[in-house]
Length: 105
Length: 400
Ligand SMILES: Cc1cc2nc3c(=O)[nH]c(=O)nc-3n(C[C@H](O)[C@H](O)[C@H](O)COP(=O)(O)OP(=O)(O)OC[C@H]3O[C@@H](n4cnc5c(N)ncnc54)[C@H](O)[C@@H]3O)c2cc1C
Ligand code: FES
Image 1 (cartoon, each protein chain N blue to C red):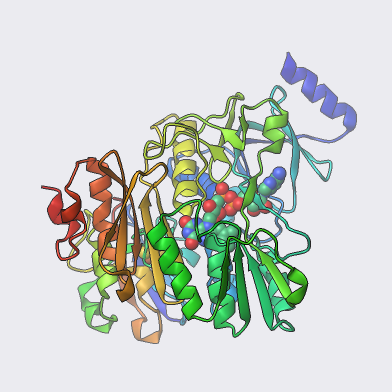
Image 2 (cartoon, rainbow over the protein chains, first blue to last red):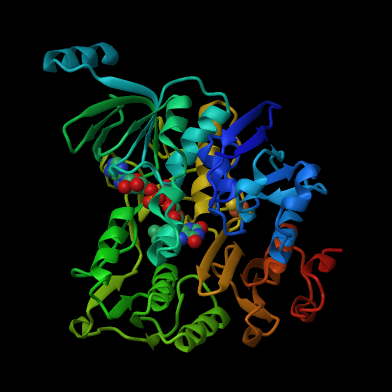
């Protein structure tokens, strides 16, 4: 199974197995990353699934929708590589992706 | 003294009384959030998450949306895996319904006869769907599994109730190819929680999707339909607390930390009657994921000794057809409703004001206003109506 490398807020890194066909958020949650609250369940309403995606992977990601962009702008922790993990479908093309959970707002 | 008596009593019965440092009753959004936030706040004691459902805790919003529609499977909206709970040292106690509480002995008694002790009890039992004859309801996975099974032979469906659940169900069932009639007692949709502009917009949209929307209907002959679904609200599940002497009525009264009027008993979520800093000047209940989660987190912090009053900005969302509806703030007791943008375009917002201050926004396919409106509510500043309704002007620019 393809792998997702996650760095949690306390700086620890973990590799979790990702299930293709689910979003990155769903995989992080299923992988036991408790900081991913994902309150809205992935419908782009809460921004509690905010992650930083390692720049090396930017090109492999789907473009950001206007809605995602607007919602991310509510976060004081937004960076150039910020994404809402619920808006990124996970698949073999992202095998090995490096993400870091963004700080709590 | 009392402790010893209890132990003796238990001993006589021959059963060891299981006791948890925190016993969370209810495995919905609030219960799950309470358990997770306790651990996040460093709580090292024992935690049990007890609920009458046998499912691994799951989210409710998909029940009337993707799950009903069949675009998301049941495994896809669990909060967490079984491993996660084991890992966090949270004991899951499924299939138990608490019927009585003894606040002095600090025990709960379940329908099965089982008794469980606690040091702190967090009551997050939510609410039970109001029933209407043998109409289907949409509150639990079981409910929707039953509904989906019945749907296979149904062509015409009557949905009773034009609130959020009824509307989402009508949208999903229409998409599934059913002939849907939606009956609402009030003269408009969402009469309890939204203004006229949204009611009218949604009624129009549902009609255009083919739903037979009937407003102001007091009584409808349901025998003419293959299947009936009722979305007529919930009864809060506060019974055992009220029986034990907790203050409340339509829910259980809690203070700004989520404390009930009974010692060592807290409540959060749909069941909690509370004064919301963004709401009217009276206790209310809020039925939303945001509220359940944030209020439960507030209880968790108070239990670990880091209390901070509940003061999160309320928000809510709904999906119907291709509509993304988002609400921020609470529109209770608004005296003015301003429409920003053109509803006919399918992208617009409604601002609610009370005494000149913006208190809530309903946004339809308008994430930007939803995002920026929050600050307007927080600031409580008074902005001219003509500026608020000028859709060309970002709400952010009105904050000065
Ligand atoms: C179909 C549906 C769609 C929704 N869509 C949205 C949405 O889009 N956006 C949004 O913000 N909100 C939505 N909501 C509302 C949101 O799901 C609720 O506000 C939230 O679930 C409340 O969480 P809770 O933990 O307070 O209660 P619940 O989720 O109701 O959980 C309570 C749990 O306690 C259990 N229980 C009850 N009594 C007992 C007892 N005596 N002993 C043991 N266990 C007991 C119940 O079985 C239940 O599992 C929706 C709700 C439903 C039903
Ligand atoms: S889960 Fe809510 S925005 Fe991603």
